[in-house]
Image (cartoon, rainbow, N blue to C red; front, top):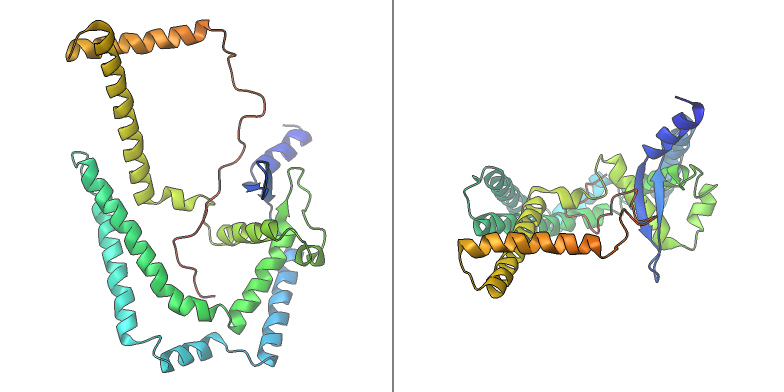
Length: 284
């Protein structure tokens, strides 16, 4: 393998995300590279600077915030029992969905999948009672600074060049939509999560499979109805005729002179991103 091919393989293996430009139909691909040792050391230095500044400004640490939330009754035995109850219910429903037999009806699978989604939302709301205040502790503010620095150092364009040359360029960039999205993608990358992880949860896979199955059934019913209308037959004879109708449509389409192959530039090089995380953010 040549040096050029080596470089191309490295660039193609980078994690990618698509950023849709606000106010237009255009989209651009960005990539997450690998931080160098120097990048990591400087990111740790940013953490230390912001942590020291937060302490100097008399902001609360995570331990102090926990004590304050307990004193205010936001964290209590009742609250923790409620969180544990929802977690157990969520785990039970996930187990049930994963072990439903193929013979189970789509309605049963759909009902279980939607219950899982409801429980995830409930758990998220419960966790936000604590995660919201915790976001303003010394540790979390410092961790945010570290993530910001790494983002400015590892987000690249298609040519492998950094989007921002310096940390100041990143902090002063007026394109806040891009900086926020880039930071979010880096956070997911650091936690080992894919951009589209929400689309690949068991309940979303189940709902998507059911939707595809129902769409196929509707198309088949329309083809049978069309065959019955054309031939005056019903039942199994119409089913056979519907296959002939489908075949004739395909042949006619080929003969119509429609261009074959994929239009230039239509192949997407990356996966579509996710919109929002259902998993509650962890306290840092």
